[in-house]
Image 1 (cartoon, rainbow, N blue to C red):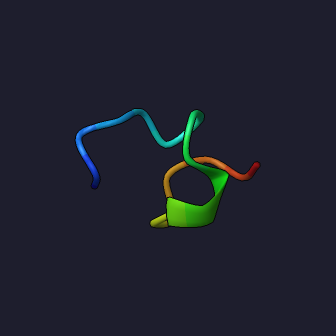
Image 2 (cartoon, one colour; image 1 turned 120 degrees about the horizontal axis):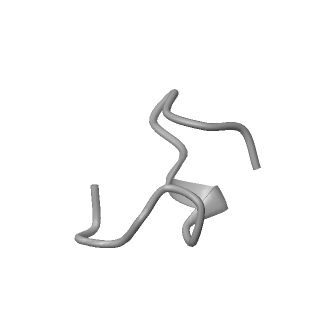
Length: 19
């Protein structure tokens, strides 16, 4: 991750949660 939540980074989705 980029140090931010996956919800705040829809472009950095790593299979955590869909945008």
